[in-house]
Length: 271
DNA sequence: CGTGTGCCCTGACAGC
DNA sequence: TGCTGTCAGGGCACAC
Picture 1: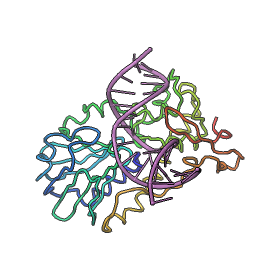
Picture 2: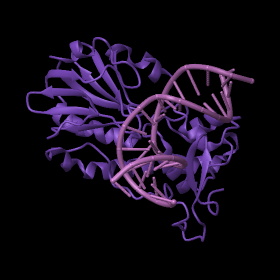
Picture 3: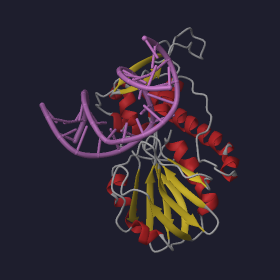
Picture 4: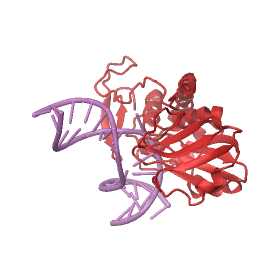
């Protein structure tokens, strides 16, 4: 379930074993994921030294010497498997260092791998249009007020739009709106100033908590077959159709469709 | 431009 | 033990 916290957790887990190491080999088991693999990917990666790892929105970045950065996206089902004891038929790219093996496994193949000149990262098209990082200083009520101005789309869909905020996905939009008491059906432009003042810290909090929970499973990475991954958070509304609202207000969690995807919310306390 | 729809792909699970 | 239908963390192309 790769949204921002999962990608952040993945990057931190990879960094433990990959940062500073030299890549000894790269194997591609298929020509493409969502997009074709870059033609020079193997040539650039093999023999390169990893100089650092980072994250932007839901993208993970592996910085190499020679001014190149490998950018991976996990799509819906992607994950990195570290030192797997068995190959998986959906391991599409396998990277090796002297001491470890890293397999990018993605059954649904909605993910991607790109190679970008490090100095040109900011102008990479997929990055150029992204909104602010939700855990950075630029996500403010003022920013949201301006970004949502005159929007007739619902706030749910506005927050999924990576140009408004970068890194939120279906789970955390549902959870943040619930915590902030904002109806997912409200038009973006109609979200009030006090609601936006509440929303920003709730976005920060729910993402931060999830990263913390993910971090607690980092010890698993060292285990054989350790899989980067998916922390066990209990969601307040996501996937809880029909259950009572945990605010104790007597509301029943409802599921609706918005933009072809499910939204869960409490009609009683989200206004 | 903004907005809405459908599709990319495999696997898990429920119901028969 | 199958089948069939539904749904799933995302993003993009395309139609208005």
